[in-house]
Image (cartoon, rainbow, N blue to C red):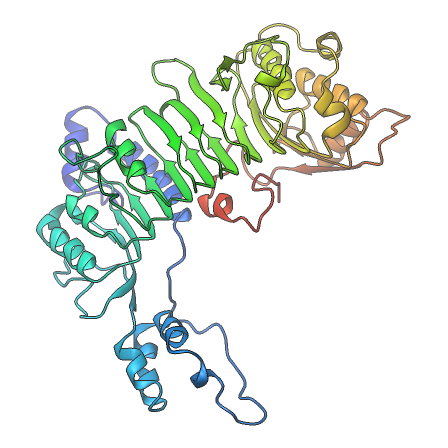
Length: 493
């Protein structure tokens, strides 16, 4: 009998009875899991030593003299065995271990009946990322209740993928001490019977980071979760199939990432701290466009990847339509880094591209991902761009530009030629050719350099690369978007 890794035997048998090839589901499930696991945070501790320290030249023990709270924080970040050994260092260290929140990062077998939180100490973090938890619902309820009793700060809880609708115990709401929560492949609890509104107590009063991966969640439950997390700073949602209507309201939220989701709308209502809105791989519901509304977001600096033909952009209360004249009410002047995903052979998409660019007059870095399509409508040549008129952001603001999946097609050539002719402030351009679209990389380099004007006034460096993978195979990583030490999360490496 054929053994499957990602789906169970019962699911495989059900698929065969329905005339569905389980091998295809096995393959697609593997892709989903790869996407999910690459987005998980690193475990809080590691059994592999990475750092060492030299004894001070005067042999004085300065670490033991640190404040008790700081010593406790240090011990809490060690593997459990090493943390316990610190009690033998000196009399100063003995009470530290006893009072420390223990780290607990595990991937237990599904057959394990022991609670991951069997220690009487409080817990800093628990990672359960590799278990078929549907068969252990009773144990799971007890585990989560124990975690709530231990004052847990960080929880990463991933179910193996079948069945997809494995219910997540509502006891999760009892872990009010959480600051970081990652959930993968669950059916979110029904919150319709829970108190909500102005007088309701926040569920996750301390939660700063939230990621939902392939979680079946209703819009009312998502609203409840966000409203109950008043200090949330980073939010990630990927693999949703429900057609979400995401409404963003929060004083502290800084970064929102929505990847490979069926969406109805994304409304940035009132987010005074929002700096990044990253949307990629959007899927529409019933062929309707996804409404993306930018309301009050004065600090929004990074936005992408918007897709003409998929996203219906609305700024404040104005829907952005092709050919709309730019005005202060239709602009988002604070955006500095913009990503666009465009079917360059589709005239309507390219028309919207020029309109979108006028809505962001102060962008300094532009990233364009050219999407392959069998649908080619209308001529998109240099004359098209010239008749569209000057675009102020291209002419005087954009300093860096990346054009990915360049195949040497007429529409892509026309845009690049217009861009190079217009861009007066450009300092760096990166063109990434689709793998296999040119006989050799030298052909791509020659083609790109032929598009730059002979009397180019801009002191610009142009780099041409061939993509390292097949078209469209790059997976977005949430950790890259959440890392604010990376000024441009879209930059090509």
